Image (spheres, each protein chain N blue to C red):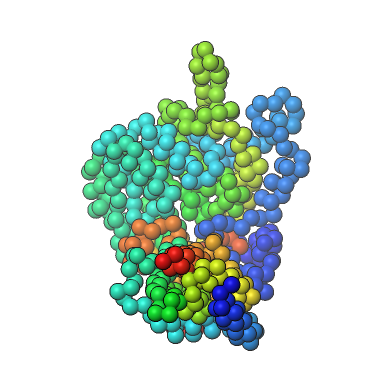
Length: 144
Length: 406
């Protein structure tokens, strides 16, 4: 187990605690919309077909690079604001972690905050594919 | 005038809650909810009548066959088809179109032939023809549309000058609601020698359809959009045409005699196209669904939906930046829209916790989305059971969602 695994757990616990304040669905979505608005938009240059993850309805772009300390830095974007909010949460959990932690990450926080339906294969918003792609980056960078 | 409260009481699902809110079901165009009569018909069949059709001498099989064939006659009457054997049971409208593409199409379409479709077709009336065209080296030509969502008449006439073998087009658009002048379009196409297939998925649930009056060669619709079960649909074809076509799927039910020595001969229409054990309970319940529609009054249903659509357009029109997609003067009640700076998916996601079920996305009409240069629309579509109060809830919900998203 990497030293960074506790960090991933800690981040997820923080997110769960934040969401505990919300009393209903609309409040959760309001918060997600805020997160979506705050997420740094992708450089237009990065909104390429290489980076696109196609959902049926909303599109997600994802880019990854290795920082000097060996951890992975993700950038992501979506054309739908609620999807952007969810993307922001996933990045907050996984950013700046070593590839091996990302590759094996269990994102249990999504279920705990009641947003797991957004990660279901039938949701078609591209989010599940994004998480899978992030793990693939983890595996790929680990091998280097 | 129909009585929405009375109608609603016949739809058990409409009394359930979604996300703690009363369900507001505005996704009729994707699939209709089912009245008790239809649910009971399937149950009754499975409880008391089930046996395989057409092959048994025992009473149960006879009774099942009688009910199954009676439903076929009900469909004939509903469409005013000339002969009962012109009604082919299929697994759905998609299946019906594929049947025509594989049987009629593979026989008649040759290299260099032209198949005409329109910009507003559902993928189900595009992809089977693309597959056929690719296999045969034929060419697909697309009739373009105006911004309003009406076919460009001049372009239609231009495409007819190419002497198409087949014109495949919808009666009513699932995304735009546009009602095509199907009788005249069919006649024009047939005058240049084309065979005409009409996709009636969005017309049969909302209006009277008379296939003898339209004079289409093929007319298809799906059961589940007309208050019937899923997994059952109908292909209507002109009798001589169906008789001239080879079978598509082989198997039981569709044969006359099978022999290794003398070869196999096929049954006549309609059974030639119904290989295997059919969806018996589905067919019977579809017959009941069509009878149910007739009992309520088909014109009354259409009028009611138009009233709801008009109210929806009036209320939604007040939302800042909202633009309707599909503004033909001749359209059904379906309401499709986009809102400036807001993704349709986000609106649908926010309506869901309010208990409001609408459809967002491309509605299986991606070429239409390309034309309007949008990722999708939000679509509210209505059935006999929807109410003006639900339209009010929709408008308030959209207003709230847009406020949150901006």
